[in-house]
Amino acid sequence: MKTVGGKIVIVGGGIAGLCAGVLAQKCGYHAEVLEMHDIAGGLATSWRRGGYTFETCLHWLYGSNPQGTMYPQWRDVMDIDRLTFVPLHQLVTIQTERGDRLPIPTNVDRLEKELTARFPHDTKAIRHFAADIRRLSQFRMPVPGGNARQNLAALWHDLPLFPLFRRLARISCRDYGKSFSDPLPRSFFGDGELDNLAALAQFFSIAWMNSGDAAYVVGGSLAIIRLIEEKLRGLGGNIRFCAKVDRILVENGRATGVELVSGEKIMADWVISAADGHATLNHLLGGKYSNSKLDKQYARPNLFPSYLQVSLGVAMDLSAQPALLTRILDAPLYLDPTTQLNQVSFRFFHFDPTFAPAGKTAVTCFLPTRNYQYWTGLRENDPARYRAEKARVAADVTAILEPIVVGIRDAIEVVDVSTPATVIRYTGNWQGSMEGWLLSPGQKFRSLPNTLPGLRNFVMAGQWIFPGGGLPSGPMSARSALLAICKADRVAFDPGPKSESLTPAPLAL
Image (tube, rainbow, N blue to C red; front, side):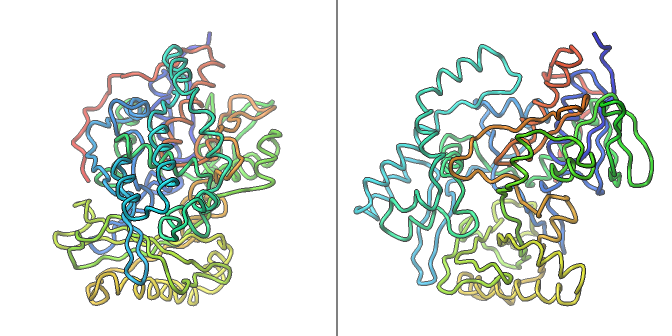
């Protein structure tokens, strides 16, 4: 049996890399996380501009219910009890330019009652919709490496749900929405870049909220990242910033460490790549290692789109607005030469007091696009036009927002626009994708292999291993990575509570 205490170097300081570092320390290894930027988190981040904080990741955290199956996995990697959760009573409010409004409550009983009262001709479709949410709310998530008896009990409990899983996994959100005759509830199920998402993914989001297992975290995604980073350091692990990895070192079919772009070599017993999957396979490993499943997946990529985000710091109290508002447009918004959007979504962060000074509000508008080449090309080849295009999009978004919040134009103090070029520059995500693999109809909701044929002492983690992405892919894929390492080294996988070498400080937001 190998002596516990070997070194694991982890490429990427996003949520998966940090979680892998924490679990490695708990299992008796020494973890060193290498992050190419000066802050951890990757896409799970926010930033400050002129006194405002703008969030780009967290809508809600699955696993907020202490009685749920995801909560213990978060507790294994951070002191989750120190987070402040805000329950979401409405998933979204849909609004047309003619003034029609449709709130979508997260409580399924209220949802069914309000929709059937307003759309009696769609009563059958609404009742089927509500019944499916209730059933999915009973789902018990299996835990990678968890208690075998509990996971077997969860599987037995979930067996009756499998026909529902298959049915909702085979239909897109767009096609499911066709069961409603009224265009307003039908629009809830998507339009444009995300309407080909399997309906099962959207149903799970609502089911988790209905069961009280998905809530917003005050401080956004960085509040979560800071706690995981704190746990890593408290257990004796290390994270290095501005440490970009150029290649993974391999000797005799075994990963032995990494080489940074600076030329520095860092040797290790194991290497975990929690970085971009495409870059890991094709750049860090030089395209020498893969497997049939990964080859097939990357040869016919079906990715979440990239996005622009217009962020506004507004000197107004916008607490009367819904937390999330989707505006249905009469005339589409021109985003780039191949992208026109028929609806846009605004998030009014009045529910997070850390995001703006008193009496003011941070507002973001999320704009999906698959034309990442247009934005990266402009930034590289025509910076002046790139800035002009960002300003144009911000002006168009403000014009859409003006009828919703009269006088907002004059109250805007900060304007910030990120693009797919920004996403790629800061995260390295392939094609600027927001969450990796899109779960489209017919695709199996299963993880991809995290090891590669012919390469020992190497494991992958993150959203490129767990289709569907999202924050839970971090701890779940990290657990799978450490399970593989511990199994190979004949070391007990023990992610439970461990004493820390540092006393946790109060969480500062």
